[in-house]
Amino acid sequence: MFHPEKMNPKRLTPDQARLKIQSFCAYQERSHKEVRDKLYSFGLFKDEVDQLCTELIRDNYLNEERFAQAFASGKFRIKKWGWLKIEMQLKQKGISGHCLKQARKEIQDEEYFQVLTELAKAKGKLVKANNLFEKKAKVAAFLAGRGFEAELIWLVLKGED
Image 1 (tube, rainbow, N blue to C red):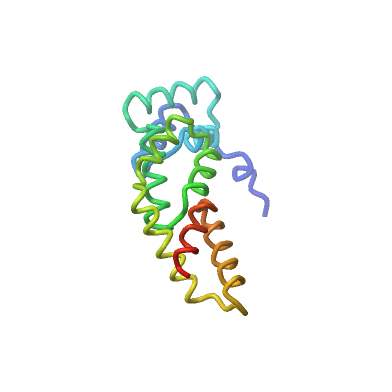
Image 2 (cartoon, helix red, strand yellow):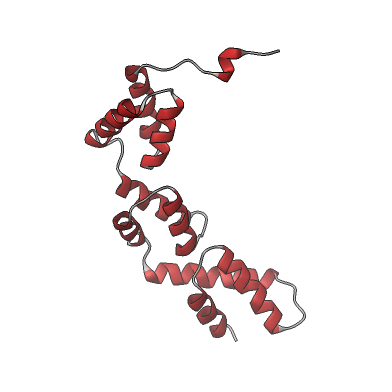
């Protein structure tokens, strides 16, 4: 059955949207782009979205640097992503260069190299290959897919000989 109200949801007032978006931002860190998209989905106009975003920043519900740091830290420590993949995702979310630099500081070089080494060893045990070259190529492709830098991948793989 056709439901026209589902095709065009009721437009929220700025006050209704403010309460919903504050709750949305309080639940977890959000990027400016995510918040703007959500506000537009409420049927708000550009000037209303701009005003609410300004308020959210002023009231510390929205902080791009804090979002970038939390995102980078979480993706690295929980999902074991490399910096290239994290950076690509942050750029897709519209994060500024300054915030990217701040996010990068969340990951210590020693910890980064340790995680890369552990992933390489674990994957190396699982990979089936005809020879060492093929095995290392498969492990390297896996690590590159996780977003680790080629130079570091080969440095770790050379150390496992």
